[in-house]
Image: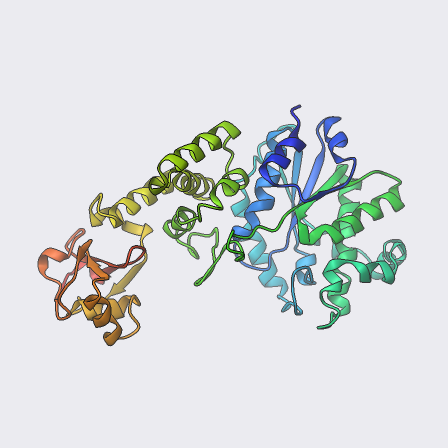
Length: 417
């Protein structure tokens, strides 16, 4: 077995780990887990780090468990939160859990085999655990003094933390103990904000079972500019194509800052060190081509949505920059559906949201920042002519503001009038 720990260090996945983890992994295949609380209907880019971490472990022959927090999701993890989470209903948790479970299929191999990935739901055991038994068998191993020292709790003392969220640490520790007993799971991984919860589980396994357990946490990803990774002005980037279009996911990675691209290639793709060095060499020789960003964008979209979607997205990107027809955009471009053609380009800009008002639309045109089908608009009174409407039946009009903001108007009903 190759030195997985060294590989993870090189890629940037290791911020903290228990001292003997490297030796533990060298002994042979291990079972590990990572928890995902279904607080939303879709995974988002922030979940990519732990998913890729699990994938690297599985590729190295280890057995990953995806632990869905059907139980802990009802409680709420205080880690990284300034205020109390809004509690979700059991029905919401079940619905979110199913959607996220389906998304996991693209990242891990669930086919039978020695390293087969499992998806478990901690509600299956937490909901059956009697309260008195839990307090006697688990709670007695934790002192309030130690719990107050954990970062996830420390960060909330000033604002206040309910007993509900304060107890989250005990539930997560019990998950580790349960998985050790039922699956001989000896390692938990996650983001760096989970270190306190993970070490609580390690201590519980040691105290109750007298056995060795381990933890590894990856750094929370930020951009070189200091911004939170996976967030844009429009909000979070989701892995569900109904919430974030595959084209928008592609453009997010395509627009990666040059200072971040090498680090992201290591974290979010499976490219080898030689591949990444070659890409960065090409980037240095010809920065304008953005070969590294292109490779990063294609790899991540393929991982999340598959090769066919990626091909369509790349074709859509070419059409937006004049290398192909408007017809190629299809489902990948942001679409505004109208019941009739807008009379003027100004009306079209307002209808799509590229301009907030007609006065703003006129100003953008006067400044030379508006394009119709990649042709610059110079007349504020310009009306789209029959030749401007493309697509099947002549019902589509492509607008662009500046270099990156675009919209496709589609007339509903298949009639251009």
